[in-house]
Length: 387
Image (cartoon, rainbow, N blue to C red; front, side, top):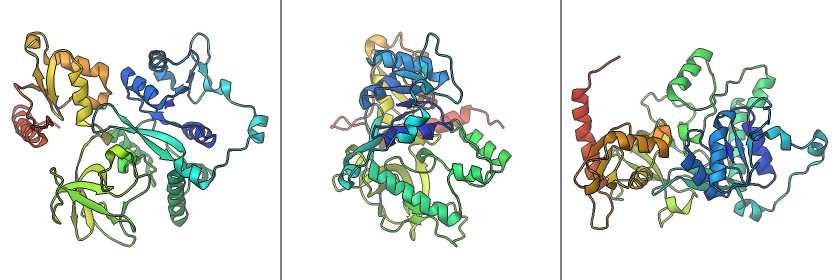
């Protein structure tokens, strides 16, 4: 498992792990201790490469997850002294001679379909983040698609670009404002971005594009690729007519939990389609990062003073014996300890007498959404506009 911001040696470690038929899993550098422990348990990781700034959390998580001592290695651009803490990751690298003599293991077509190469994490519909298993064959297809595009547009890999004496800028993490500033400052001409910025972890390949030679300034994300199908549904699971917003379902393989019985993959994007062109009008994400309401609700319910809760804005029903001691500040502090920064309830916390639910005990999301709209108007009227 790798626990680090993005930097130039990440693909080196990735290729080494996957190429030797081991399983790669990257942990979000924004994750808290409990989230890292969950991922270690869930993947049964046996070794962690951690950035210097994240090493303390990694060591604590490894210990809490029951990993033996010495399974955390410092992972950064330059060698690090290993005095009392974790050793540098270069300490277990093979020699140049061993590297020259190494032969990557081969596998049959059937093995490439069934053998897991990576476990990528995203927020599930319930509980903590879920791991999405991707086998070798889809990764091969994804690379083949990118390679074809690269050859057509002469948009090659970063290594090839550097051979042309063209600089490559690598951001250690995605921050929206910084992302735009870097593009403007350095006059970036081409982007290679991660799925949370422009796509989905589970799909692995592109599914929507703007056809070549087309001029479109309407904000549409384009049309479906050949051999792809898409269906828009409302909150009740019914198909919506053309021109009306609905949540996208795509017919691709992914984790079983995210698939409907008839094989459609829930994307979490709210879109409108007109004459084959798609417009994304809403997303169930925060700053391009996935945040499942059920995950935050589960964390809130772990607090011994909370009887029930619903988000995206935190609507909290307190237990009778906790109403005098559990304040909004107490809940904010609890959430800071439990989840990453981008998952914090920045929309606010409101205490309610009851969380609206159906007879099946499922939260009535439509009612909660109306609450959010109502409160947004109230907040808008109280907060002064500022530049």
